[in-house]
Length: 270
Length: 294
View 1 (tube, rainbow over the protein chains, first blue to last red):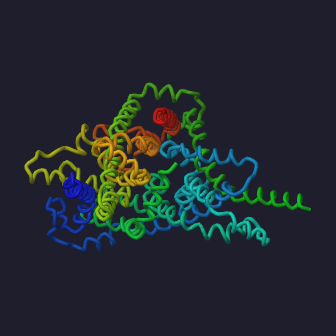
View 2 (cartoon, rainbow over the protein chains, first blue to last red):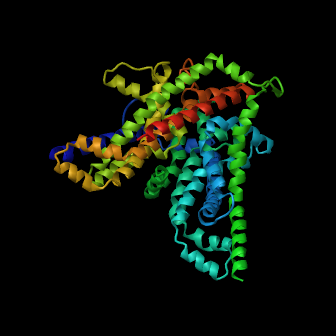
């Protein structure tokens, strides 16, 4: 029993961990091989061609599409945080007619699967004249009842005293929110920001549907296009492009893993 | 004086609340709620690349019932879910129990490794999937050859491709679900296990009679979210197989996408989408009912 917990279990756990990161290793290793060696099946690359990254940057169009992804994911995240925080605050703090109905209705939108609404959403966005535009990439991605729900939970447990004092001082309720509640919302904003950014960086189908113009392509669309497209991209260059595309979320992962885990836990608590 | 001040506060409260709720309410209405209503409306029309919109009642739904490709896609969807959901559940729970039993340093390292694939995107996971599982050049077949195993068809085989997609999804989603389980396990009071230990319970018995029952809420959550998600897997299929080979990975969500955006048949695609919505809705209700039954 002692030996089991001391050696065998940790060894098995580490094996599982290594198995999980093995595909990531093959991605990075493959990105450093020559075009002829990329599939050679050796574990350590022989070539170490860092030049692949220069070629990926110069030829694959990923610089512009990474820029687009940063603009879209960044804007969505910032605006969504503001909207959802305001809505969550109103639902948690104020008493007003229709409160319960609005909240239940918002939660009911969580049951709408994206795969089901992609066509009608496309038709609506087309009616609004937002096809092939940043607006079309950003606006429909903003609204998410989950964010509202989590902000509401947070503000329900947020101490009232400071805000009451501010109101007594003569601040309006809106000012009280912007100058007191919002600046103190870090514990919920940080994990949600990471979660929203990763989710939007990951987004592929929606941007694929509404952008025909390759100048508006986000990085996921660009990468998928490199895999399946007519013009042939060598696998070593493709893998280098994929590594570059993974960098922003990996930076988040390693710098803010604690917050990321915090956010995941929140998503699992009903 | 006091009464009017109170009502002034109330009026301000109402106005502020509605103003704060306005952006999200309008947005959720236009971009989530309206599309579902619109899907049903469009599904009652013939509307495709060749004909303008015309009301045809439930004809699209009648066509759906007779559409072999639709039933085939549903079959593939159910098969996918039937394999993916239980596997993910068992693996995530197992990994969580295992990591929980480790010393702090090892636990942190292993958790980080298992969660790491979560940091890449679905398209990148699909690219890695093709890189590893391509029948001719895939790295796994190269490794198989080196150790003398027969090469497999993987993504090239109608009987294996769906499981390759399952494997990629398991790989990127295991860590996320493990972390949720781990958080719930940590909330179980240690005394329970000490008491069980004193009573001479084995590790398995402690799991079976303490851990597992106390994770009921979390298990319900994970099963429902995973099941609903499994009906909507699209990204990896679009990049890895495009529904092939021989339609073996053409799940319903992908069939709906094809009918809408490749065949430009809006009316029919909407009927398919609405049918899928009903199926997902009913399934999640049934599952919720089953799992919360005491």
